Each structure stands twice: as structure tokens, then as C-alpha cells.
Length: 339
Image (cartoon, rainbow, N blue to C red; front, side, top):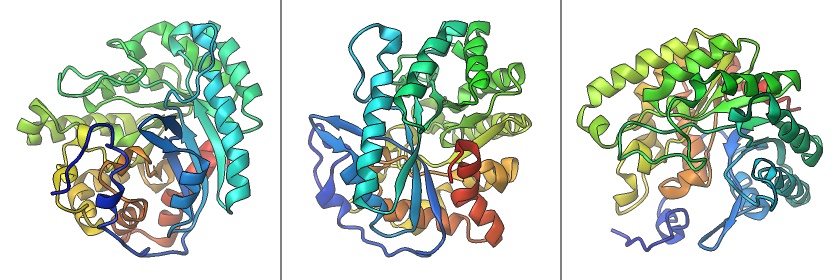
């Protein structure tokens, strides 16, 4: 097994190079509906690195940046995330010079717990985004399972159930913006409550509802599946909710064990592992409310960019051309106003 060293979770390039795949279908248009950018002492993923990935195999035409605490401003806490939107807008301009794919939408962070007062932050994001700002992700991922990591925005329990949080989401609606939701499967009831409280809000459920496979959830897989599946179906009954299928390589949350292999998994192995979850998600939401994502560079823990998209192509193979087009590009274009 290739040894891992501290800080190289997202940069095990020699190990990742052991798995090379050509695209299964290099022609179908792909909108990568979920990726990050960052510049950390141990890991860099900016326009140049993103362009290298999107141009490496598949036909990726557009991407959607999702917040990750990158390049925050100094100053008042509530306005600091605007720096991320400003920095990503600059990276989007650089991306346009590097290749045909474009960063075509930015989803930043603002604290929805500010309620109506969050409008000031949203207006600053819109101004900083140079026409690319599309919405907010406020991750509330905080499980009762200690082995599951608390989200990087340091959420508190039951945040989405607070009426003030819903007031913040209503400020998004007033500006024609969407809300990306990232929580774990044992919190999906909160999403349902929020979606019903603000039915006019476009809500995007990240990573097909975060089906944890660590701690007690790994020890009770059948029960965990049942809770996730029933909660996901409840979310799908809210017509204002769409879903992202991805995060397939988040070994630290989903417990695949792939990061400990001698070589990264093949796209067939990835598809086989995730098929029950992906098929259940598509069945619940339908292709027109489903979009695919890379979750890069997070998923670089154990997957290469071509393997991610090949796995998703394998998982979508039984769907019609129109259904595949929706999941690979159409839904993301509609939700994030791309194209």
C-alpha cells in the first residue's frame, strides 16, 4: 500500500496515477455542478488545476463553484465570505483564458441565521460575483454520530428548524438566488421542514443526502440505509428540492475504505459500490431534478477526475439519452441559470 503522509489527503498524486481510464463517452456534455477552489499550504486547487482536470478526458463545458472558506476578507464576520466570491470571480476569468470550460456559477456562504439581516451580505456577494453569483450554501452537517465530522462552518444542532434561518432563505428568494443544503442523512427531516416552510425557495440537496457510513452507522448498515432512504423520499416530495449525486470519494464520511487500497478503485468498482444509493436517488427525484457532480478536489482523496465521470456514466447507462442529458447538464443549467 502507498503510504500516506500528514496533509496529503487531497494530493496523493503518485498513488492516483496508478489508475488511468479513458472516458466511456467523451461526447456527452457535462456541467460539473459541484467543485471547490482553494489555496492551502498543503494543497492548491485553483483555475489551473481545475482546467487540467476538466480538460483531461470528458466533455466538461461549465462548472459550478461551491463555497469552502477560501480567500475570506478581513473585517466584520458576516461579510468575510464575500472575499471568497470575489476571488472565485477572478479565477473564473483566468479559467476562461486557459480552456473552453467555464466557471459559470458561484455559490458562496452567508449565515442564514442572520435572518432578514443577511440581505446585506447577499447584496455584497452579488456585486462581487461579476454576474456569476447564484446562491448560498450554508452547511449544517452535524451528526449525532461522533465519528462524523462537524461541518467547516461549525454548525449548531437543528439550525434549519429555527424560523430565523427560514427568514434568511426568504432573502435568497427575493433576489432570485438558490440555497444549497449540505447535511447528513440523520438530519434530512430538517431539510423537509425548511422546504415546506419556504416552498418558493429553490433548494439543492448536496451529495444525495449524506448517507454516513462511519461509527454506529457502519455497524448497522441496513438500518442506516432504511433511515436514509425514507428520509430521502420525504425530501423528494418537496417540489422545490433538487438533488446532487456525487461525493462518491468522500471516504472520511462514507467509509468506502478506498483510500487504504494499493491502487485507486476503477470506475466499475465505484459504480458497483454506489449503485443502490444512486438508483434510489434518481428513482425518488427523477432525472429532471437530479444533477451529477465531481466534488473535486475533495473526492481526490481516492478517485481521479476521469474515474468519477466514468462511474457516473456507468450508473446512468440504463437511462434514455434525454434523461442522461438532464442529469449530466440540463438540471444544473436550469437550477444555476447557466447557458
